[in-house]
Length: 324
Ligand SMILES: [Fe+2]
Image 1: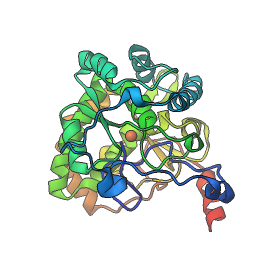
Image 2: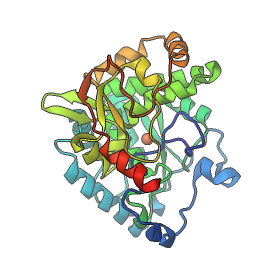
Image 3: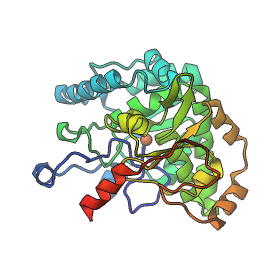
Image 4: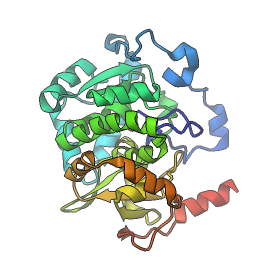
């Protein structure tokens, strides 16, 4: 799931596959206007249920929609070995997810429920923050039921079934991630009251969406925004441009992120169990310190950052030049 737009500072970031890095202006103009879903569609996107859940309507997917899933699934599963963390690969193996069909959420939930007590529930698209938090706090992962159009393979403003299921659900098979995301939902409800959603959103962004983890052979992807993105799966690990920085909770709370392009900095956790440590921390004093400290831009580094790589910034510098 992701927040609705760059101008809506919700706690849920846009998805990894929201990159239009290779499209020209002419191509963009030639593309059909994408339909809006859920919260982004205004009143028309609000379903009857107060918790915004709907029936996935699995039998209604067309052959073309299953084919889009297959295209995305096959190219991403070719790319991820040696890039995704072991837990992602294992989670994918253990779930009823394959190339040929968009997964059925009920079947996913049966397996997830046995492993970590989570389930996947269908929603039309983006949902309000409090609804989102309430689902997570109760170990329900709200997944968009629609799939992107063929011309949107690498560009998507809203999280679809590929991002939500391929990117997020394998990691929900891991007990540490399962507990962390539930705690995030509980923390989101509290952060709303404290006026600290931006600080909490940055934690989600730099972990669940765009996190890297140390493993025996090097850095690996565990963030769903990366794992579901063909281009960022390469950029985050191979490019000399971004910083790769040891994760620090308070530092991350101060750090803005890129919502419409690759990240300028990725934050690296020691292992997935490190996330469990954060479920035992009282965030309230951290929020206050983070709010009182200088806010950091996405590419900023601090003297006491522990670096895996000091990025040369070449990618974003070139982008800034092009866009003026
Ligand atoms: Fe997401």
